[in-house]
Length: 490
Image: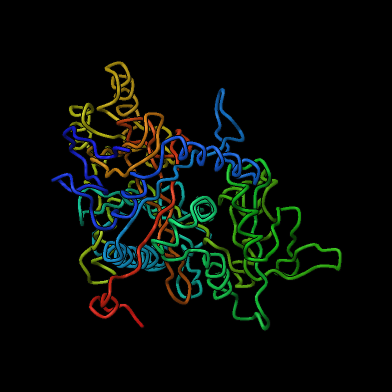
């Protein structure tokens, strides 16, 4: 099977170098693809789809004509990262989440970064995700984003860019885990031959991290529960999956109540105290007493219990002020300000359309830029200038002029590509990576993450909600001597 395209390409091919030779980390994958007939791969792909559907791994896509129970396409050619590449990424991820959590503590306390003139105060207090109820509240370990999903793209051998910091309720970790289980089921010999570093300890690591945040008054093993908006949420499968894998209860708002500023769960044996809630409900719907009074998803009085230190919430209320696309521009400054370090991972150069000069530049260069909503997610509400028609760019220009503060713009990056099984065989497709970072008493990052793939040829949109697929992410073990040479602990 020919997987080496001979046409000129401007993107970084993760499997082949510029001379067309297979990179060492992909040597085993290349041999496997050469000796595996395409019809066998197609049969395995169909088997994976059948198994995912039987297990119930679906992702709701909303909108006219959308499928509320769509299977996310799964590509069975794994994405491979060498251990030294992963080491670079993990150091950059740890640095970034430390700075972001320091920023969040600062935002709701002294705002030293504002006094230093690095971020305008109006950008914080006028942010729709800013929550005044968090002012002055000090959290365990000063951690606000306990579970972070950092979207990373690659443009060269050591060129990694952060596209987004997902600090509120990042999703996708269940697909990361199920993708690995599917690969081990379909291709056990291939997995055994490569020995990718394991990721199946993530649920235990998540539970340990959540328990480490328990209130000081907790005098027993902390009771953890996952709070879901319910069956009709697009990520409900993940909520149930993680609760099951951690061995904790999956609850909805009506299952909980607050008494004497303590959160309890209704059970057949009577009320049971909850110490930590891994909540997958947005701030506005979390507590009708503190936020949206019409919410039927949350728990009345939850914020009172939270502010009095009787329950821990993961992630913390108000984390969204640090992960919108306008705040993203300032993360390199945060790293230097709070940590005194140079950023390891790069930011994509970003134009803030609320600034008149930036807006003028963006309007003149719409044909070469990607424009995104500051509060947007999931690939909605964005314009990919090079792929848009003249009419689409003109319509978007009108939106920019009407609400410039709602948008940022970035150059179109040449995302790296990895071999992907498509209708015509195996071909390169553009990818990104969402590693999951757990922050409690310590920082834990399981080796890998969720690789998302843009399936149409030439497409740069990897979001599942926009038709993207996923694939397993393999981090290879270190080469002999690498543990010592790179300073990894025993």
